[in-house]
Amino acid sequence: MAETLDSTDLQILKTLQKNAKLTTKELADAVHLTPTPVFERQKRLERKGYIKKYVAVLDPDKLNQGLLVFCKVKLKQINHEIADAFTRRIMRIPEVTECYNTSGAYDYLLKVRAQDMRQYQEFVLTKLGDIESVGSIESTFVMSEVKQAYGINL
Image 1 (spheres, helix red, strand yellow):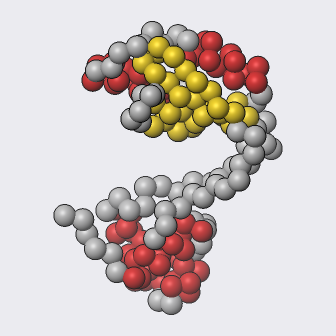
Image 2 (tube, rainbow, N blue to C red):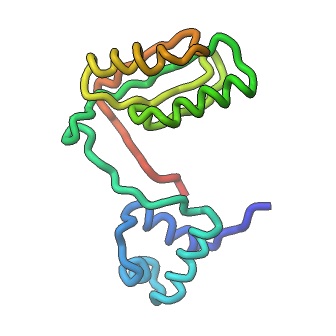
Image 3 (cartoon, rainbow, N blue to C red):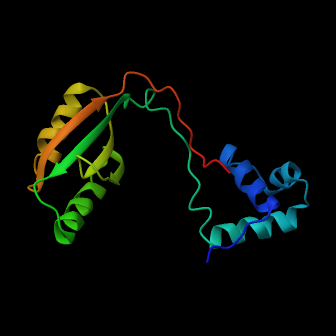
């Protein structure tokens, strides 16, 4: 059974989603508590897995990784062994920033970052193309990012 979070826990999570760099004192001020209970609550939320990790959100254009592609992958056949082998391979490919096992016409949805179309083509030919279980892929190229939210609506 899932633990119920109180309004203060939820406020801490909401605040950290907006800015994870806040000091304990700044976080305490934002949720109207003193630092010690906020520190203890934050550590409990981390320990219980509500907070998985803290990350910096980078600008892909400034880092020459501006091409964003959603790549739908259909495997030739699927069972536990094939799915496990596919996901192990995908986990080692740095261009794949996210991977989802999906239902419908495709088995997996990959979010891929590349420098340009040529680099993406090389990714398809040498990395996805080397995976024997891949039956087909369909690429959707992002023309512009309209909304990118990193948090969960609490």
